[in-house]
Amino acid sequence: MHARIETTLDDLIAQENIRVLFAIESGSRAWGFPSPDSDYDVRFVYARERSWYLKLFEGRDVLEVPIDKELDLGGWDLKKALALAVKSNPVIWEWLQSPIIYRAEPGFMASMLQVLEPHFSPKSALHHYLAMAAKGLEELVAAEEVRLKRYFYVIRPLLAADWIATKNSVPPMTVDELLTLEEENSAIVAIIRDLIDMKSELDESATLARIEELDAFLLSKRERCERFAEKAKSVKHPVESLDEFFQDVVG
Picture 1 (spheres, rainbow, N blue to C red):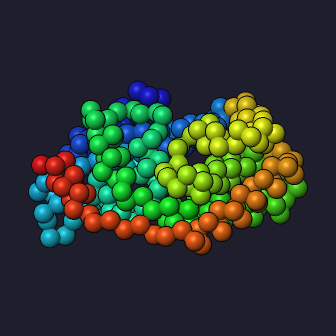
Picture 2: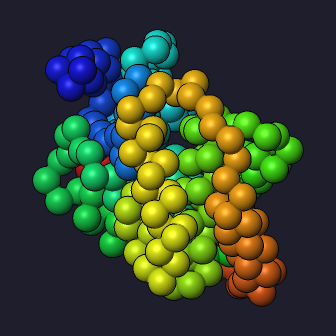
């Protein structure tokens, strides 16, 4: 699969005349809870030649290939990625922290993370993660039996939101790192780790009975994070440093 990912990226580079600045895994494999049949969610950031950005009408700022059961691969133009970061879309911070990197220009990811650091808005990121968890949480509490996968699509965003509420900083990407805040809550950590082990052996359609203790934990996290989000302040910094970074990359 890694060879297929590399070939697909090389084909896009040739077809679109782009530079792939970095390409990473962004789904359950990177979050730390894959199933045996989990697909590969590859995301990348790319740049075009400077002349492309000087056109009166710019083209599309995303690239995608047809999705199949094994591979979901898509990327953002660097300009789009930086513009979304100004709005504190936390997705780009996640990509830059992925533990699975397929390729990257030397030093680029660290440089981008550094230039983006002042633009992280805890309030905006909190709302993002709470929104991610909301639908799954509603489905969870309304059913007697739930998909194992659904639990994780509530656990991870709520742990990320709680990280922001606790540390007022960018949350890590992996569940393992997020769980370091729950060291005193050993029972919940044990439940989540058992679910991770279970998911590693079962396919994506596996279901289980609801876990009352875990449900109560997740609901309390949501309430805590919602209270924090109400009081949190938005962050807005000048974008000159991002302009300079963008111009340096595209030449």
